[in-house]
Amino acid sequence: MMTDFLFMDEIAEFIKCQRVPRLLYKKGMCTEGYFTPYMNLSDYTSAKFLTDTEAEIPVTVRFSKVFSEYGASDTKRDAAGFFVRFFTENGRFDMLSHSIPIPDEIRNPGSIIKLIEAFRKTDAGAAPDDQAVFELAAADEAFIPFLISYFSDDTTVKSYRSIMGYSMNDYMLVNSGGETQEVSFVWRPTAGKKSISRQEAEFLAGYDSDTAMRDMADAIFAGKYPMYDLEMHFKDGESITAGRLTVNALADSCASEEIGFTPVNLVSGIKLADNEFNNFTAFAFNESARVRGGMR
Image (cartoon, rainbow, N blue to C red; front, top):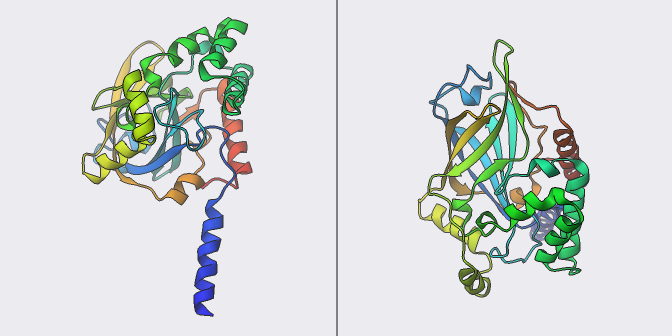
């Protein structure tokens, strides 16, 4: 009987991991590590994780393909998600980024929904990837900057160790005196950007369809921990390299599916900028997490 109960516990744990799939970012991997600021940024923000240069802030990082379904090859042209959760003494802060920036021309709910719908048709086999993007740009010139980014080297990811991360949202930094500055964030790999050629993609698609994830895992197991510098970009064009993220472990697969990143996970000293796009993404990610069974 005791063995039966243990077996039932295993089944219950297995079922717990079977969650409603994400609308986007289905294929991905979850990692862990820490973040350390390079300098005391209290002139800009009261967020403590950006002021203590001796601190190692625990983080969870999920790397994913934005539009690909489960089983898709990592070598398929696609934007990549680069989502980071900081576990600060003041609570959780989620920073959602992509390997290509979202152009200003489509930073509105209507355009984003059109983009998602176009790729949902692609996943269903209604149109090739290239055709879906070209059709969007042909119907609405606002998608032309996205088309240019999508067909750049930034969507041919060779490894998650070597991708950029452009924050999806704009933020307001608030210091202890109540002064504010609007910023966006960029993650830059210390190993440099690396893309993959068409010839390499064709080989790897048949040889190792999980190449981007496997390369990340192999590097962690070998102790060659991937690192990324965090840049703060201000509206006046100034930028500061704020700190460094080090990825040094893999998270378990169940945690990878349970975790729900959302722009509303903020800490004192950092607010979302008040605009239509931020409000839309905050609601969309919250609702997605709710439908999938809550946010971990």
